[in-house]
Length: 303
Image 1 (cartoon, helix red, strand yellow):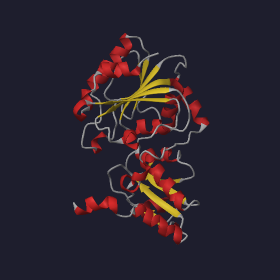
Image 2 (cartoon, rainbow, N blue to C red):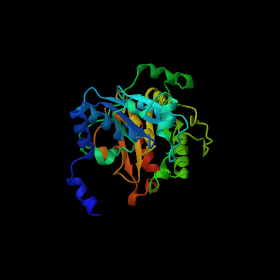
Image 3 (spheres, rainbow, N blue to C red):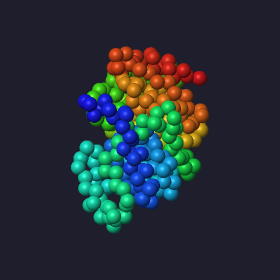
């Protein structure tokens, strides 16, 4: 308890390390990451930014699992080593992973096995806008899904697959999603596109198009950017990535929150997308289930 109380008054251990590395003219960093997707813009963008504020020429390499690797390519000038067999929450072997890529740890000056962005990078809150680079070649990825450019599409990420890693329910109830989709259909407000990993639960409605499990990261982002006028999401990696893509395109995003002290709301900065309109909805008593279907439907404010 005493250590926790004194922590804010102690020197930042990460800054202390960076000063030492700069003084010793060391610049090769290996960062190990096997946690969440949303942490890449929310924490690791600032980690790279901080490293290069002390060591401008630093080489930064991330070692991560396969499903996160694409997102790291949206950070400027970093390298990625993929642990092909890594799973979130499961043990992994750093040296064995390096060996699989014909590498060894002595190629790096610093190996950050357990980075702590939340603790090390509090200075970024309200100050630094994360910016994920967008490659124009990804725009054409949306074309393969035969979605009418003139149709109104409402993208929905119905369940964040990482909800089990938190001490509270992040997902809006399935029954609420069904009622929202039903209302969208009855009011003829457009078609719903589902994003996510698993096609469960099913939403068997004519105006609902299920893309869950069918898109990789860049395909999903391309569909959101080039086809969706609206997006409805819980506090999730999808929201965090979409929020910080560094390109302008019009979209209205309704986000659903149990704890507004997390995610993009905790960052307290705008999206780099100047046309990004964000309407966060907070469930009464920190319960996301208390957000009503009518509240979400009305927040979309259809044009």
